[in-house]
Image (tube, rainbow, N blue to C red; front, side, top):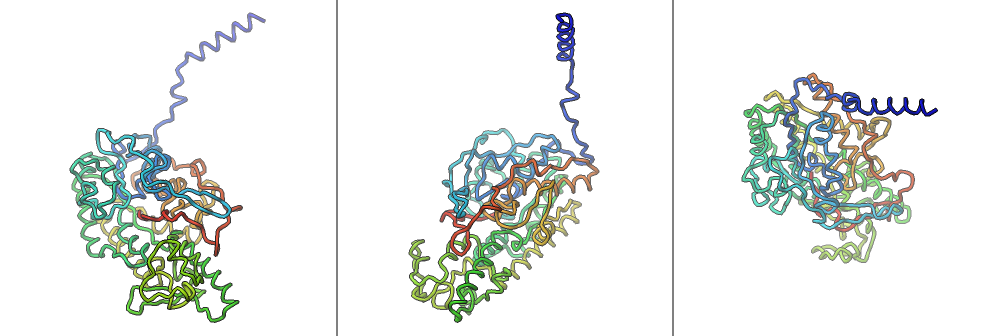
Length: 461
């Protein structure tokens, strides 16, 4: 018996000493003509890996650029922010009813601010197209209160474009322009959008700079806001609530709201609310909970001065005397404007991509298709439904970690097709998902989510 034990030990020792590195180290994928030696991503919060209104490490680990770099097995350094992040992260406080809480604005801190070099991820939450060409810090950005410019650019006296070129990248992604229309949409048409002609000139300047530096670039276009739950969640539930109220009071005609035009008042039928022909933003869900109130609770609860000409003795949101606030409504005319602007922006992106021989990733078409048909990845079903759809985080604008993995796969598909590569796609089922709420989530009054009042202090891409 001892003899057999000794033989076993000898064999074990020999096997333990054997070099098996070729068995344990996976082979690098074939990247074809795509050179990942120095891979850089340029853009806004969608590039940064922003989720649930904040930038934080456990989400940054799943930014689409980082996920692509992981698949290509190359280094990719990001401006890491410790959890729970910067921006005011939205978290689920209660499932039934669905109630959120918000972390302090600066609850996290940069952890690698002293990194010697240019970050591979140059996505700056809140950046507009002009910022990539002009901003060297927060003070020179369009939004001078946006501290993410200082965190990413780190006072090196260079713009995003200048930093990107100075790093001599061998491959880059560029996804910008979303914020140039989003501010208009999220404010109910109150804030201006970047003029289409200005966008065209600046986008060409940006791409010309990258082309002159000889950088191969993958461009992404802009999804229409009608496909994201920030705009599609609230109105149908309000329509159902008003429909129920009309059974008791037949004089109710629908949602009565303020508008930016000279007519001052708009009216949306119940049918238009149900079909999202009139949209109410997630930020407006708190106000929507007070529809029908005759005590001015929306204003007193939120410590808002009652606007001139408003009589809170009338039902809130149901009469011209006490209309629903304009800033929470994207009416049909404003939706047409958004659609036209996005269409023009995307035409510019497509034309510019062809002009410079870049590679276009059609994110807009993908999200439009998901909004209609849903999407299945590695056995997991996704939709654009708020929270339970699994694609969007709690701010209703930015993807979940799995959502970013799906976007990364769109880029990988393009790289494989255009560069003759064979980079393996990400198994989305292995990426952490959102909360499993589909079978047990209940909402508050009027079947609306109850958000912390600070949840949407800043909404951007």
